Image (cartoon, protein in one colour):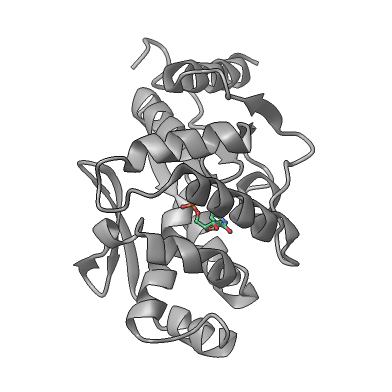
Length: 231
Ligand code: DC
């Protein structure tokens, strides 16, 4: 922690952007540097999707999924690997990034009631500041008054490359073309849905990190935070 930063206003930082832009890695790194809490909102949508799949519910039945979400006991906690999600006391974090959940999460996150429920949770967790949130609608819907808003993107090709490298040698490994298709499909669903489509807030700073490292990206956002602190 930088000297003199301690008494400073604890900011709320919103990082939005498409799948694979590196939002979660950047947000985690930035939060650690600032001593802030990191909230991975995508993981919350994934948790609802995971639970719906486990209960045999289909996204084609939004009423059933909404009802399940209303009665769900979701807790988030800071774990060793970053944010962890508990459903009814069980840590479901290891199951949230599977291909199956990835395939179903876009349609589940397009259910209006599911969004209402999670947006309320995210606002509550952010009310004291000192938070970095990453997602799709943070700067536009969840925290329109965020101190720093970033819209992080990279080319679809570059995002697919990163994902491909990440999965290589794991049980989730897939051909590059399949990953690329998946990313393009998710982009289209996320940008085209009626409720909170993916778009940059008018006052967001656009960062294309296609040729930037994780560290460079986190530093670029840290600079924005310092500017706000010093203003
Ligand atoms: O960032 P991610 O890949 O874990 O997000 C999973 C899905 O959840 C993605 O399809 C978009 C959706 N999402 C959303 O609609 N709103 C958010 N704030 C975060 C994620």
